[in-house]
Image (cartoon, protein in one colour):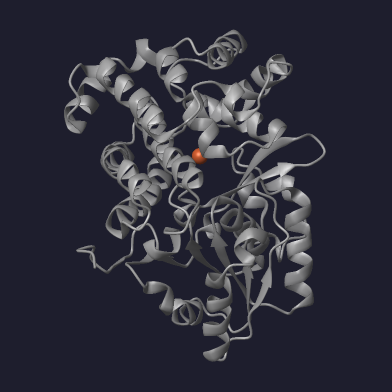
Length: 387
Ligand SMILES: [Fe+2]
């Protein structure tokens, strides 16, 4: 038993939060206007009882559901194309995006592309490119996160890797925001330990980078603060006891909060993590976790003062240094590698990674301008381990 409440939120979309609420999936699917949903997930989850149970509950409620799971850990364009083909062939009328970042993003992108005529790259998150999309061609989405990290369940974008150029692209449209979200912490309880750590550190990176970005967005900044507190307090608890549903629930909230907060911007952690993930297929959150202290040090001149307030809120002594020390200790306690070699990344592509980092859409949110020399310096420190 937990004291975790079961609540409904309507911010930023309709969220049904609480232990056991996955049983409301058929109702949520009907509320989103679907009769024949395509459940999109990754191959690992597709073989687990939670997906079989979801499909059984949908069918029992008279909903003609099918599964599409040909999705890579870092989804590529071909996964989206194959998903759209399956969606059309099956005559579906909506998507259940089910899983971690890959299942959620692939599901959202399949729903988005199901009724578009232009290629996916025309809708990259640049300027007002999203207005090129036909909003009537976007299928409704119900999102069911099974990790606590990406926050994509409450986001309006999907990340997909261009398999020709090996670059990660963000595709954005306001209608990609899921109509209904089910946040059931029980679905995250059996995550492998390192996925719990990596996804939790992704949520922390979202809040940390949103808080650090220089743009004026006090709403997001406030959400980022509480999101960080929830990660610092609860990630060690779930790593110590995977069945602690209360801590898992708080992490699930922190994940959604991170995605709301990063409307304010991300930064160099993500700018470097994206090319490394695209070139080496590393885990996104774990890659962020490795880069985190090196990027904080790079940004120190711009964030030092602001981190006095952050340290005060989090209860860490020593201002900026206190936060940095807490990040280093959290990484160490959770078994995050201190250097990129721990993720089997070498320095053979350092120039390319730096060139990709500075044009990554997240680079503009970094509080210190991310130049190629700056990106190289951060990468080299993440290789050598010198904070
Ligand atoms: Fe992220």
